[in-house]
Image (cartoon, helix red, strand yellow):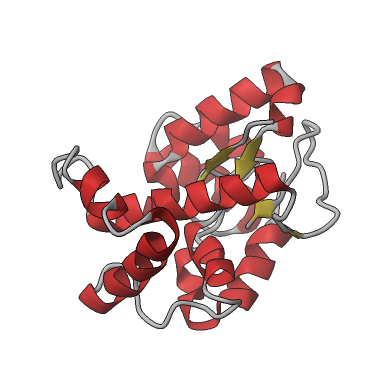
Length: 191
């Protein structure tokens, strides 16, 4: 068995928030702002940020966040790949790094924001305790910081840790059982 754990929304609503996002925000407490709203399915056809905002505004009287727009092309690519072959959802799973770190941290949200020195240090401690003392520095040395920031590398380790849990049958899912979107894709967050 193999697993791909990605920090990209899979399964999108036609309106309103996804349950997995709401449950992750509630669990994360002071780290809840790291879970930004997934786009609505209709927004996948938008070609510009303004167009995406207009689509969401017509449906919900809200705009799309810049963070969501920043990964929209990747969301479209993942969505298309999974709709072409639904069996891919057997091994492609949505994760959220902060929810993964929370599980890794004994069920407690991380104390510090991942962009801070203390936040990077507490996440790095988890990474090095599981993957070895040189794991982070080994990966860090392979990428320029403008290509991959420290917190992005740490998030990737959280996804890898979760992929190991998926393969071992120890991963959990928000919500369980997950609902399906209008295209038959699971709307879940695995950790």
